[in-house]
Each structure stands twice: as C-alpha cells, then as structure tokens.
Image 1 (cartoon, rainbow, N blue to C red):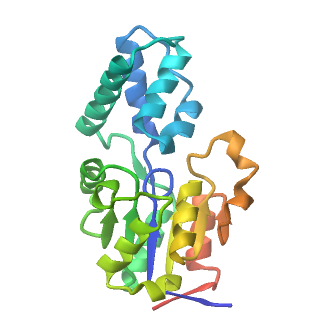
Image 2: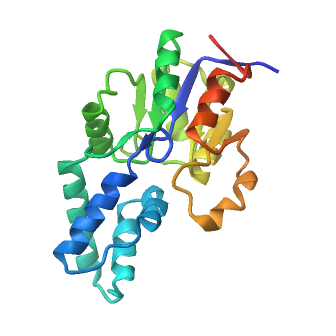
Length: 236
C-alpha cells in the first residue's frame, strides 16, 4: 500500500550525518594530552548517541580512571565540547547514498528536516559547515522544547514549523537510529524508519525489532532504496 508523504524528518548523528570520526579524533586528542590510551574507535562510535558525557566516561573507564570527581568529570566534558565546537566538521559527512535522498526530495519539492537531541549551537554550526543549513527546512533541538525525545513534543514542534497539522502526522516520515527516536515518532503518529546502520551498541542489536519501527534499514543504501525506489512512498 502506497504511503503519501509530505515531509521527511531525520535524527542527526548516526542517521543523516556520520559524525563519529570527529568524536573519535577528539577523544584521541584528549587521551594523548593525558598520556592515556584512546578507547577503540568502535567503542566510541557506540557511545555517540549517548552524548558527550558517555564518551568522556568511556575514555576514563578505558584508562582505569574510576575515581574521578564530579567536578573533574564536568571539566573533561566541557573540554570535549569546546574541542568539538572548535573543529566540528573535519571528518563528518552525510552518510553515503543519503545525499542523493536529500537532492531527490528537494527536486520533488518535499521539505526535509532534523529533529535531534544535539544542542542547537552545535547542530547549527555543523549544518552550516556542511552547507546544509539553507537546505534543511526545519531544525528542532533540545533547547527548543521542554521535553526531549522520546517525548513527542519535538516532533509536534517540527510539524508546526513545517505548517503541517498534527492530524497529518501520518504523512511525515521520521528516520532515527535510537529507540528514543522510534518512540518519539510513533508517539506523534509518524511512520518510523530505524537506521540500523547508526550508532547502536551490540547489546541492542538483537532487540531492534522490538523497538516498533515501521521499517528497518541496515545500510544507508537500503534507506535510499526504501525512500526513493521501493514504490512504498508517494511524495506530495
């Protein structure tokens, strides 16, 4: 059955943009500055969706720094964020095959946007550096709402900014790589697509079907095919 689509919304890190390489670089820099060993790249990638604190804590655990004070932990976190803001887009890129999705949506006149838990000052800078800021029709960040994903409030805000009534949420796709993305999209009444190629820890891989996404894509190429070539969606 064909699904009519008015807009497509994406999570940011691990769904639309592969930002992990820059986080790996920064954790490596911080580790070197402290004469520590950097955690394996794969382990850092798995923590990206959990945020800056999780990546810093991984670095500390990996180097047996288990008794760091709360104050020191906050200082490490702030250093991480400052370093990231200073060089936010050295190696980050749109996932392969998804640039073609954005281009095709734009050609069809279908707006696409981002609903993310990334702070606005970082999300805006990243999109600007990647020259996506003028293409993105809507950006909703934690700063904009009182309740973040998995609550549907950010999804409703995105609909409002796009001029789409809540009753038409079924015509807006949401793509994400975390259970909170799927829960938020489902709660808002949007068809959801799980980007299983994203930053998902191994322990969660076996339970992906239980997250309740309408579709699961294992690679960016599969997401491209689902959105553009499968015939499942008709864009309005």
